[in-house]
Amino acid sequence: MGWWFKIDLWKRVMLGLSLGLLVGAGLRYGIGTETAVTASGYFKPFGDAFINLIKMLVVPLIFTTLISGVLAMGDPSRLGSLGGRAIAIYMITTLIAVSIGLIIGTILQPGAGFDVSGVTLADIESTRATLEANVAEPVGVFEQLTRTILAIIPTNPVAAMAEGDVLAIIFFAILFAVGIMLAGEAGKPIAVAMNSAADAVMRLTLLIMETAPFGVFALMAWIMSSQGLSILSNLLLMTAALYLACGLHILLTYGMLIKIVNRLPMFPFLRGIVDAQMVAFSTASSNATLPMTISCATKNLGIGKPVASSVLPLGATINMDGTALYQGLIALFAAQALGIELGASDYVLVAMMATLVSIGSAGIPSVGLFLATTTLGVIGVQPDNMIIILAVLFPFDRVLDMMRTLTNVSGDVAVATTVANYEGELDEDIYRAPDPI
Image (cartoon, rainbow, N blue to C red; front, side):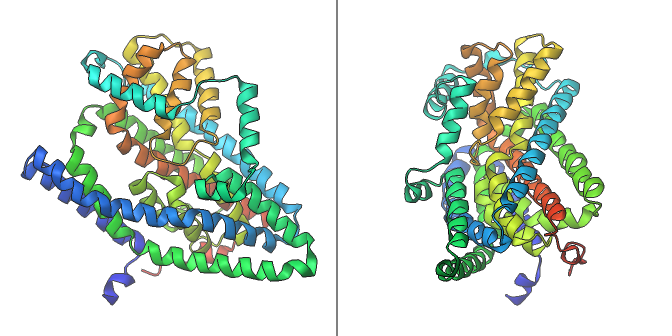
């Protein structure tokens, strides 16, 4: 098996992804739909096991590496510089992402002529139930801001870790690291323990990521055998619009950050994050991909621990470029399908709302669809019509979510690279190192 481990992980993941799609399609169209759906149930547990393995690492990874990274700064005041730059760039790239989505949606018109009358009552009721279970009642801007701020401060850090509340974990970990530094000599044993724990968790991350090719194979085989190509053919133009918009955003926006702002070559960046991109594409979860994202940033791109351990967990929580871009596309799809005329002011409102609702959204599959109710509301879509539009999108949202998550993760690393370059925490020798294979 030595030959297997000599192949780059991303190549093995791509192999698993391709084989999974082929096996799933072969089952779907070779043995019949009903039998394939039954067979897909045998793949799903293995895919779920892989996702659970990497989700298992998220909380200990954020907690230990963030503390270790803050300690490596040596000066708590640097947190303001890192956080301020990261948040500012995240906001700018998110706004650009929405704009690209609106432009592509206007050009391709994915909702024009789409017949929403084919949505069944069962689809509508199922969608309504899902939304009621996942979407909170709308509140005012000030109240929402207050809730967000209060939610960041955990009343019980242990409970926050148990629930996987990333923002609360980040807040507590930063304060705890500052407390260790302020404790001086008394805090040194804890600092040593946290640095050791961070190294141990990273080693475990690399070990678990070796299972990625098999986990991705199972996930792709499950999706294709259970749903088939119909999830694409029903809304092919919407799928094409999203994938095109996300691809342009990665190449143009992140390319500008890397090449123009940082004066670095783009190819090493794309080559360095491909492992994280493949895991993001298959899991459709920014949080689940975080262990691999941090590993790629430090090992492949030379991003220093202080930046990687602080900017990337923050990005997995507040940087949702793909989600924001999708919000713009959903708004245009709904307007075009329902015959709603949009003016320039509506485009501005959609861009602003999509940017706001995407920030801090959970890094979990299909969250963008749950947030769409807010975006659709600003263009005048009535609640019953919202349910119809979302019922149309629900069945194939997973395919769209995979690309959205890949975009989110790419943006996290692009911003981390930019912040690291400004802070002198980027090892260009590692970044520019030639591909060993």
